[in-house]
Image (cartoon, rainbow, N blue to C red; front, side):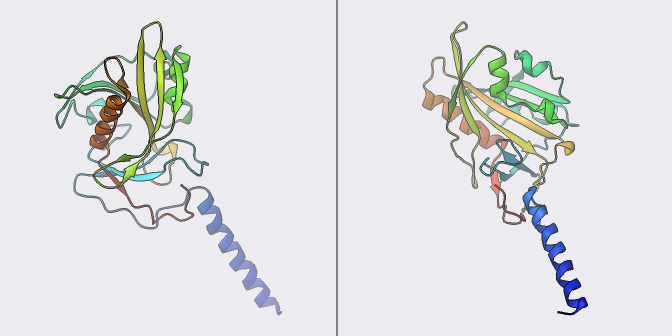
Amino acid sequence: MDRLSRRGLILNGLVLGTLGAVGLVGGVPARAPALAPGERGFTFDRGGLVRWDNGKTSVASPFGFSLRGGAGQLPLVIGDWRGADFPLNLEAYTSIDPELMINRAYDHPDGRQVAFTAIGSSSTRKLHRPDICYQAAGWKVSAMPATPIALEEGTVTPGRFLVTNYEAREQRLIAYWYLWMDQRRRVEDGAFVMHVASTLRGRSLAEAERSLDSFVRVLLPRALPTAGLLGGLT
């Protein structure tokens, strides 16, 4: 093999190696998912950049979540849901002083109730999973399997767990997820950890699940194809 041929093979190997490295760190969008007018695209997962199975999905929302938008970017009235702001009583969350915090109770005319919390930051130190904060506040956390939620289009699979406060005689079902600005999932671009809670006081577990699922469908109506990703990490 002559010198020029050897040099060409080396250069080709370097190019392929670089593309492989891009795939391993999560990939870059080769084709942006189609969005309807008024929609904003995000990446949804259960956290952890290096996990192979964390529910990573492209999603569309009518709400333009950003660190600069303030709590008002999520309206108090969403469809038939009516919301009211209230202080977050989990000290482990409030002590981290995130760039943006939304904490709101929403009621539906048919009796469904949820509490929605969104913590936004450009620092991973402030984006704790909610089960960690419940444990720090003295709640017992019971893991539950992640369960897909059918949207208007596609599905998302948030994490789920039960929390119990025996002193307050309160038990809640929690669904949580991370929301990233795009498929690269760069925390420096801003990111959110979000969770929806539904009380089991006077309600069955199945009723609490229906409340959570219906509210998630309002926040994130559509899941989008992710075939444009290089590397295929999920």
